[in-house]
Length: 235
Image (tube, rainbow, N blue to C red; front, side):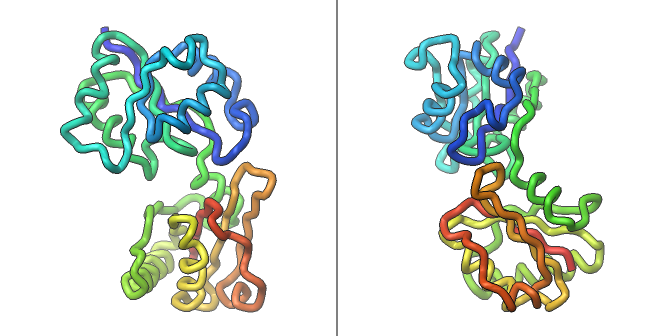
């Protein structure tokens, strides 16, 4: 019998696991001995805080990130095929959402391996919940192009789609480019488009603010410098 692949959410910032993960989720994590993680160092810090039942040095951690080749995925499931349960961790938030872990989940599904998503923080849903934008029709677009002209073109297309479908558009950016994205939205989008900036979700410094593009232009930009941020638009 194959083991189970548990999809383990990770806190969105430097907080204790029990502040954002339910007790039954922590109890599911603690007995596991096999994990697939983005970065072993940060995963060990998280697992140490969780308090695993096995000694930390005895845990088997295999890395899966943007540098992992497709041909390497198969070996990551070897412990599960041998009957061991395994946890999949992202660096922060829910694994397999805007995360290379999705490729491992796809392979597990192909092999009829049981996949169990555990409850925990999702910055995308938290941002949508607090935005006041359309929560019945929305789309996550991941990362938009980094180059200025390509980014502006993508924003115009998303705004047009949002207006046509009354669909909230959700996207993220590398934290050091947050301000460039913010400025691009103000320069590109229509004055009445509603625009949400959601920063440091679940942390003491959390901020979620929705304004029209016109009103954003009249106030001081929020502090988002190198801080995890989710952007949302509704035309």
